[in-house]
Each structure stands twice: as C-alpha cells, then as structure tokens.
Length: 421
Image 1 (spheres, rainbow, N blue to C red):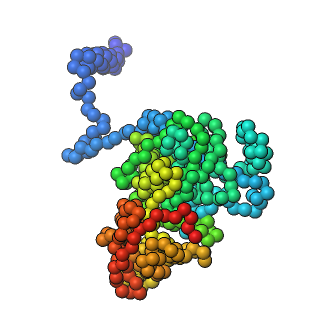
Image 2 (image 1 turned 30 degrees about the vertical axis):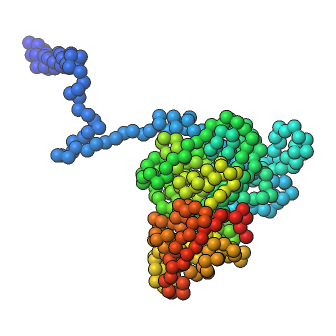
Image 3 (image 1 turned 180 degrees about the vertical axis):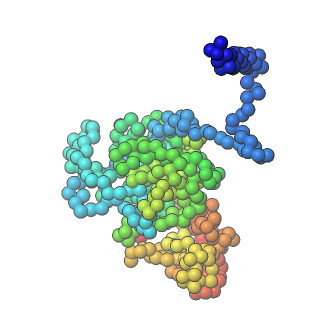
C-alpha cells in the first residue's frame, strides 16, 4: 500500500507534466503552420524599457567577397629592379620615417635576378643582370594598360619597372608621368582588353564608412585584401625618407584598413568597388593608421595623361607648410590659417621656384598665403584643391601676409613644366 501511495505521489504528476508538454508542442506547431511566423518578435528590435533599440548584425562578408571578385583583376603589383652592382648599400625605398609617419615602402632584401620572356636578346641580357629590390602597387584605369600608382614607387630614374597582373602575367612598364604636386604617377604596359577600375567620389565619403584596400603587401604577397573604415578626412600629414626629401599629403583620407609596406599606389575602394583613394602613407607609431590620397584631387591629372600622355595643369611654383594653431603659438604668428611659403629640408628645394608664376607675382619665402581667389585657405580648403579648379592662363587674386602686412596680388596661372628644378 505504501508503494502504491508513492507512485501516486510522484509518478502521476510527472506523467501529467510530460503529456502537457507534448500537447503544448503539438499546439505550437499547429499554430505556426496555420498562422505563419508573423507573430514571432523581431530579435533585431529589443525593447529595453520604453525605448526600442535597432540592432544590426550585418558583417558584409558576402558583399566584400563580391567586391574583391569584381575588382581584383584590375589591381597590379609594381616590381622595382636594378642592376645588382647598384643595389649595394643603397636604400631605394624612400619615405621610411618622418614624425613616425612613413610611406608603406620599406627596404626588402634583394631576391634572385629576374628573367622575363622576351624575343630581344639584348633586353634579355640586360634583365639577367637585374635584381628585384622592392615593389609597390597600382590599379588599371584604361583597358590598354594605363596604370595609376604613387610617384615615390617609380621615382628612381635608374631603376627598371615591370608590372605583374593578378594572374601572375608580367609586363615591362614605362613611366609616362610623375606628378610633382601630388604623390601619384602613371605608368603604361603594352596590353589590351584589361579589367579597369571606376573612379568614385571621395567628397562623398563618410566617417565610419567601410572601405577595402588591395595591394602588393611586403612586395611579396600580391593582391592582399584588407578591410576597415574611414577613420578621418581632410588630414594634412607629412612624410620623409630621412635623407632630405619630404612629402606633404593634403586632405588625406585616414583609414584603419591595414596598409603595409608594398601597398603604396594601390586602391582604397568603397563597397561599390569604386576607387576613392590611393593608399600612400602609414604611421609607424600607431596601429592601423593609414592614409590615402583622395581620388577627386587627382582625377584631372589622370584624365590629362589619358588625353595627352602627360600632365597638363596650372601651378603656382611654391613649397609651403599649412599653418596650424600650434605653429601660430610657437612662432607668434598673427594668423592660425593659410600656408607659409617655406623651403624644403634640403638646400636645393627652394621656397619659390625661379621663373614660376609665384616668382613673377613677387611671392617670397616666409610670405603667408591667406586667400586664393577670394576663398580662405584652411584645413577644409587646401591650395592644391583650389588650383585644380582653375585653368591655365587664368588670373587669380591672392591675399597674402608679407612682413606682417596684408596685401592682395594678382597671379597668372601657367602650365606645369615638364621638369621642375
């Protein structure tokens, strides 16, 4: 009798619970079959108190994969080679350090001399004496082989350059034009029906927007893909090789997409696969602090080379440094905007180029340019960008600060010369 009472006490409730659970599950399935899932709460909308919060869990993997598949064939590796007798004790990778900012273009140990297939035996013999000493990146902008890269990638007139496509095919490369204002160059290979990249609108970039960088990392791993966001816009940064040469990047795009040695000249892309910047510099002091030249600032240069085979653009003929609040404080200046006309770090980098439009207009070292064509020169309106809006032959009023006194001078823009002393 006692055993029977135990069954009634414990087993009966258990059986009832099981049966109730089964019936509940069956009823739930029937409910969803007949009424659908529209009554399931949206887990992306979580109600914390009285304010609903929209939570997004989109990681864009598929979009990134599709983007890379679309653009990868138009991104190339630029190979730098030199006669082995000239590579001894020579740093052919410029812009390594300047205020802990350097172009992503470090020294790489020479590899075995390269040999390329070529019917011309003399060229073959010459190439057999070459050693690959480094490399950069680039991207194709015309189907007949016009390629954009950084000027500092192809700035050595004694080097020999070639280009490797994403499938490994190599071509000899000719340097068509090097822009002395922006750190870009255009090179050409003899090819047809190549994939190309579209140029986007860098002015429309938003802070936090996703971007992708592709390049020849360490001059060894071609078409390496990294992804990040736009960390900042309108950055004015400087870089130098530590041996007297320096470069100013105006209104640069800052990104945390990893930019490494060898990425120089490669594209920074939006998620539509359009080029919005040219990867150029990286901070070695921080982590994932890279910089790219906005594509809008070089579109005219690219089009000029497409149309004429050379860079046709107006110029001033000065070297300058943007004035900051810190510079104003340190040097007791009367203004915290504009640019200071200043010579480079080496003796042959004059502040005002002799015979240039600036020289003819009377600009001298230590003058401060305040306005250009009625527009104030500041962090949002750079001199280089302003000049790009004018044509050769235009006359422009420039407000300057000369020895503490403001005055306005008229300057006539001329064509940028093929060579600048």
